[in-house]
Every structure is written in C-alpha cells, then in structure tokens.
Image (cartoon, rainbow, N blue to C red; front, side, top):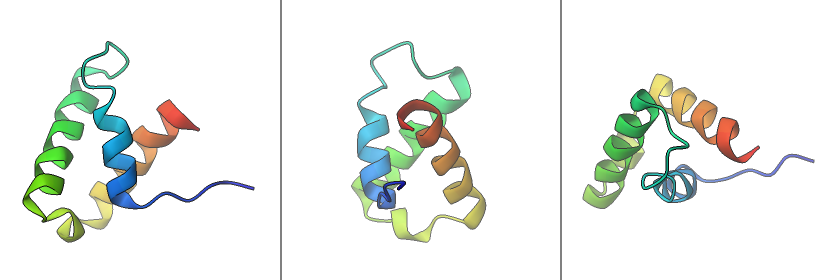
Length: 63
C-alpha cells in the first residue's frame, strides 16, 4: 500500500538531498524554491502543477 506524505513533509525530505548530487539542476532549483515557500509559510498556495512536479520529484527519489 503506498504511503501518503504531506506537501511539507515531501519538501522537508527533498531538502535533505540539496547537499548531494542526487538532484538534477532543475530539481535542485525547484526544491530550493519549495523550501523558501515552506519557510515563508506560503507552501499551501502552490499551484496544482507545482504539486504534480513536487510529487514526481519526490517519487523519483523516495518511492
């Protein structure tokens, strides 16, 4: 059964990869952007497309 993660939890887990070479250039920039949104408290305002990209990046590295 697949596990479900909150948006903030996915971002927090992906932030752990920022100091590695696991993320490509796009993913690195995207995760940094999501980290800023999380820190600013605006993560809940991301678009459906951003949620889709976040889920895809997360699943690529943690599924």
